[in-house]
Length: 143
Image (cartoon, rainbow, N blue to C red; front, side, top):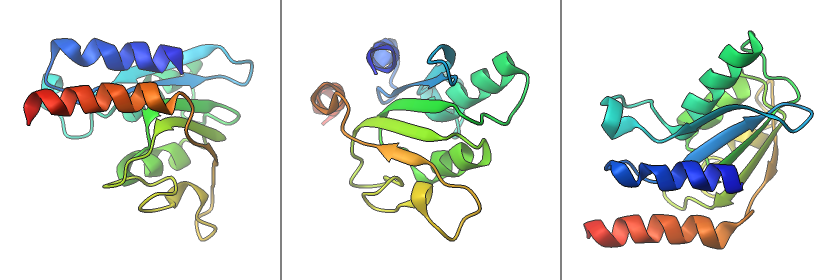
């Protein structure tokens, strides 16, 4: 989670919401990382999770990320939850809950929906206070 927080802090040089994500292979090595870059890229799908999944797939040479863990500072949204399941990620670890658009147990629970062909283990609240502090600081400056 510390690596994901560092990526989120790197959003300071842009107007992107500070969210960072890393993908760990089954041995725990980082194989992909990303931070929110929607504003920087002018790309609506450039969420931290999407960019980390793409980097991991490229590094591993396969879009199947079986056995991998995604670690992200904010609960994934529905779009990212869909991408996580499509990539067959085994586990999702996140810091802060997203009460507006979370899809890992707060608003929706896409990652554990038994109606879908794939599911992921969800571990919430890891370094939650640090993740919340980053987000609160970002939004306090803009409101």
